[in-house]
Amino acid sequence: MTETALLRIPDYSGGSLPNLVAELEWRLTGSAPFDRLHAHLSDRIPEAASHVLLMIDGLGAHQLDHPGASSLLAARKGTLDAPFPTTTTVSLATVASGLPPSRHGVIGHFMLLDGHPYPVNVLRWVDSTGDPVPVRRHIVPSPNLWERLAAAGIEPVTVQPRGYSNSPLTRLLYRGCRFEGVDGMFDFVQAVVDLARVPERLVFAYLPDVDISAHVHGFGSEAYADALSRAAHAWERISALLPPHVGMVGTADHGLVSIRNAGKHRIRRRHHPDLVLYGDPRSLYVRGPAERIAALGAEVPATWHPLGRIESWWGPPGDPAEDTARQGRPDGAFLADAGRVLLPGHMDRRMVGYHGGLDAREVGIPLLVAA
Image 1 (cartoon, helix red, strand yellow):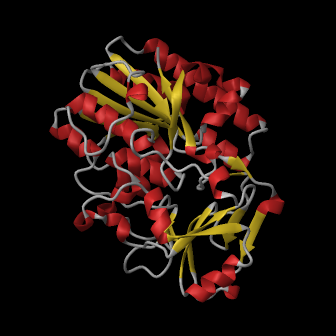
Image 2 (cartoon, helix red, strand yellow; image 1 turned 120 degrees about the vertical axis):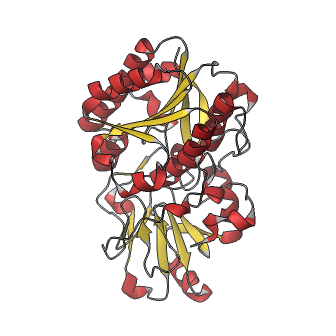
């Protein structure tokens, strides 16, 4: 891997997802615990009494070239950076906290948690053996975004598929936020519009289908085209129905890259019993003896980056006394080469689309603004 050519480091100074969340919080309350957007991005978002933040999971900026995304492409006002690693749990925790990963504590799809012997999938809250793990709600610091908004007199609401209403991830992220579960796209559009009509609200609306279809079927599939078209239609309908006092911005949690089966490098645990492997397939965290890490490095199609480097990829540090991200930190990470993923036994090798790394296609996410 040629670092200077391929790595896109998130711009946490004003060009990333946490800056967008801080921008909306500042507009609604007059303050925010993190830096706002760069002026050239902030100026493209109109003032409003209420705001809708629509997140289309898995919609990288490069994916707007698809014919089904024409209305989204027309609404694009810039490109932001997803936080590292570029994965759903990290970005959703970024929204829920208004902070970068260095300060909200969720630093991967699989994490090491104090007192638990195996890596934990924090999307599903099961460990690498398949056993359920109790949700540790303290990982995301308090007050979170929703609690700060409520304290300032702004009502936070999230609109998501009804099946997520009591999921472990929901219990982790939406403390203090009203959860509106919906069934289908018509319900979704209507709920967002109705809820946003009330002044002094932030409505966080989340659509998962583009990401799911890209993972399972790939960019060239009919399922992906259908999911993208439905997301674009939802954007069009909400934009048309919102009253003038409501502003809507849209973005994503990450983009994706396609990986052929030949690019999937399996790592067999019995060959590396002294190492703990977690994180994501495109950015594999490793903890263990240096000589064993070096031995793994000799066999994987990836570049090793020590902890001192990847800490900056999580964002600027906060108060060390409140640094929840410090638990479970690795000795470093292997960033997979272009077209490759690294797959220990507990990571999914059935997918077509992957994310988690620092390829520009994974990091770049759109900034959409409704007319």
